[in-house]
Structure formats: structure tokens, C-alpha cells
Image (tube, rainbow, N blue to C red; front, side, top):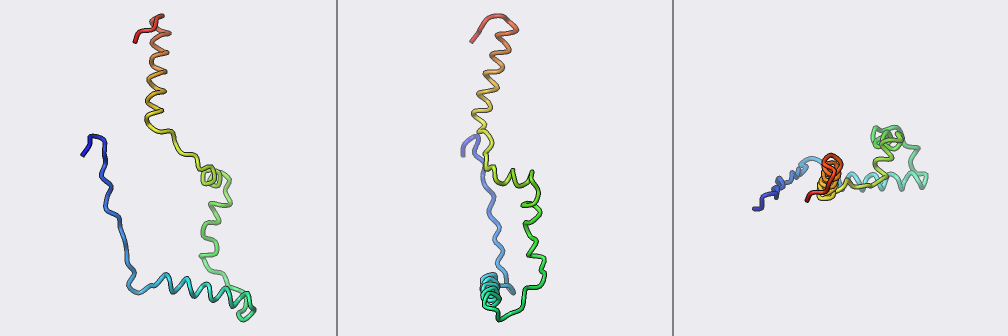
Length: 98
């Protein structure tokens, strides 16, 4: 075990007893197909219809989601800090000392 290695915690997996997500997904697909064919009336309101709409409607959250930028690695940040400290030392003392 290295000095800087961090163990990852064991993942959590919850198996449903009375709920089958696959079966529910198939039922939704069948219902949507029947609606497209005109066999069922228009769909009524369900809370799942608005899930995720808030994030897509706000500009600052949408920008954060779409940007996909990753933060700088720690190595680059440490290198930049060292360079800045050396520049400050050069300015204060008047000569470069390494």
C-alpha cells in the first residue's frame, strides 16, 4: 500500500424485492407504442415528466453540465505554485537562487 493511495469503499448494490425495473420499462415502451398508434388516449401528468427540466432550464447549471471541463491535475497546480514562489523570491531578493 503506497503512501498516497486511497482505498475505494465497497460499492452499494440494492436488489429490489417487489419491484422489477425491466418490467416497468417494457410497460412504458408498450404504452408509448399504443399511444403512437392511437389505441390509448393522451398521457396524463406524472411527476416523472418534469424530472431534469430544472437543470436544463437554468443557464448556469446547463453550462456546467455541457462544458465537460475537468479541473487541473494536482501536479500542474503544484508546479505553478512553485514557479510563482520562485518569481516572488526573485523579485524580493533581487537575484535568482535555486
